[in-house]
Image 1 (cartoon, rainbow, N blue to C red):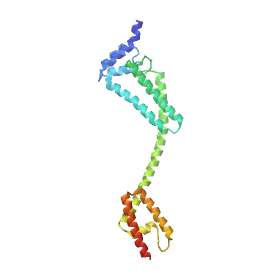
Image 2: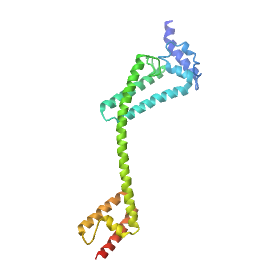
Image 3: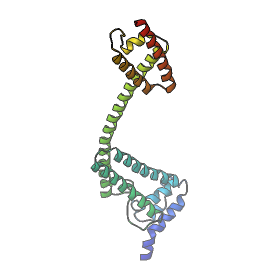
Image 4: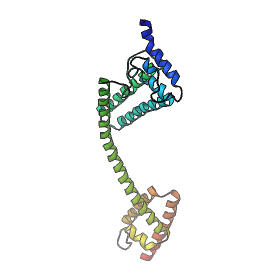
Length: 238
């Protein structure tokens, strides 16, 4: 009887996995739950496979994988080492125990008595995992506030860049149309009052601004139009 007791749980779990198949027997139709001792604790994963099949098992696996992925994302967004280690460690602890439970249920690893986190029946283990999830969610909220601040700053920068780009494009279109008076006033040059050095500096600054937002073809076209316009304005000033 002692020998039978030792193999009863793992053998019953393998039977449950085999009988579950791809789609399972359906909710409430498990038979091994009456034969395997403490199946709701140590062998919960085999019970899920028997009733819901491999599709149900795949869903459970994806839940724990998504938890690990989400935990790694939160850890990367934390700005202090304590929060990173806490989130990473708790995520690995929960996911590692879940996969250890699955390995035992499919007879890959030795019997350890590990429960399936937040799915298996339990009291103290359930409370501990609830506490771990509470810590992860609390740190996640802190990281979320940081993300929102960064996103708001990026959005403001994008708005400013769009406004500047639109202003430069409008200015470029005016130059391309040959509006000399608009060109001269936008540069801020009065050839009768401004020294040649300041005029040249204003033109150079404007060229540097245009070079950042225009394509090389647009910039060459604009520069040719500007030089022609400035030359014509200088002749008129004489």
